[in-house]
Length: 391
Image (cartoon, helix red, strand yellow):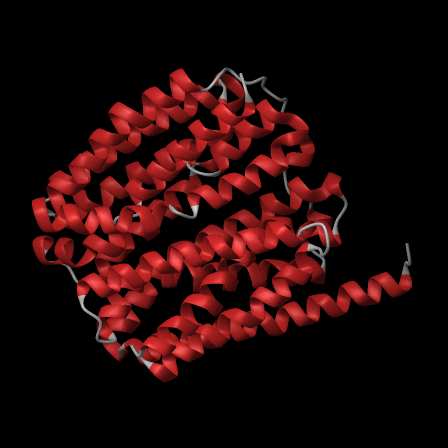
């Protein structure tokens, strides 16, 4: 089967899947009102999803080895549909969180990592380039689905909107994976798949983990509460959805910039440039509020910076470790990355409701600036190592 068809199927199914499970930024207020829950509590649904994804990741990995990624991904799509249907029917807090746990377990079987595993099995040496292009496609999920979600919510309400996404997962995503993807050869699990203690104990690795965790908290947290944040700054609902959607498009632009310059500089250089842009963009919105100039600065600096850093985050360990150690390093990074992503939405939603948008932006800008300072320290380590061990 041509690689283009495989990529197209994965791009469509990942984009739709992330769009379907990424509905909280648009529907959170309506859900909070219907279930009589605080807004911060509603955002804990995303926390439950990411925690469930992290806890069940190893079990999903075993399923990939036993049954193949294609079948596991299709099963994950069906389970995602079940979780979204349960969410649409939720009348109480416990049922609401149970739905997100179901969606999280399904996410370990379907979202992002599963697609990368499939490409690794199917494409071999071409997998790295295809993974980079798939990141570009999935970055559009919010930009494409948030306006659609807002329109459906206005037309049908949040319950019917959520149920419509459940049907989409069941009648489009699951069959497309089963019919559109060929069986991929299965690779045996190697000891190198798991994190080695000597990697995790180094100061360099601890710095990388801290930078990645801080960046994940800032980027995913802003994405999760972005619409609510823009509204709190004074933009209307339509303007808030438009601004959040445009931010997603600028993130795609950042990933394109990284891909365009990938052969001329390494991931650490990309990370430094992106890491400097992000706090500047957040500070612009913090100081300028909802003024168009401040919004434009956020879109350009934070949008492009966060998009470029997303690519750098996946390849930065290659700057410091051998390729044979890459899988071990990424395995160890995955847990703090998921925990930071899980903690960000409820923490920022609580801060937004209690202290307002200025406090949220000041906090995010401070965390992004701290990440940039740690990147400078990492760059110093790289330069020192290059001086001590010239090629």
